[in-house]
Image (cartoon, rainbow, N blue to C red; front, side, top):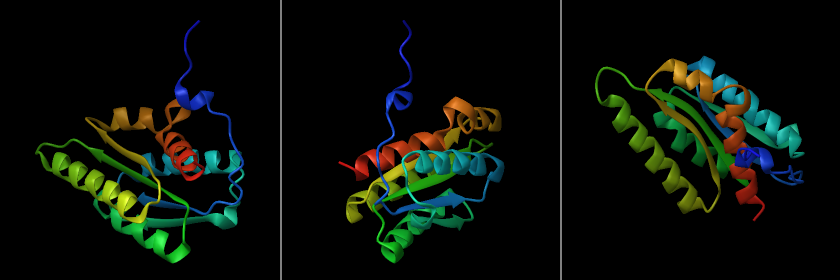
Length: 153
């Protein structure tokens, strides 16, 4: 018997009392919007009321740590989901951007003691990003599950 992916084995729990933020980058918007749909789907499955979901848009992934921090402070969140997409280019700019974004999100999570679900894709091509943003491999869904599980610890 083939093992299912971990996140599909997780049964939705009651997260109806949680307040959750979503910080989403507009850069590569077709990719990030697909992950937003996945994250919202998961939040509904876990009974997070729409009135308890707060969304902030940023230009790119680099601004996500700041947006997460601001959402947490403004709405006293139990968890936040960071959604972005960084695709390799002709220079090493993507590597610096990805590293700064990931370190920033980790710092926000540790400094605020609030879980950050990570849906910031770092791929070589847009085609790879599309695969990870749709269907059964939707990183927005996975990040939402990770954030909710951590908030319910």
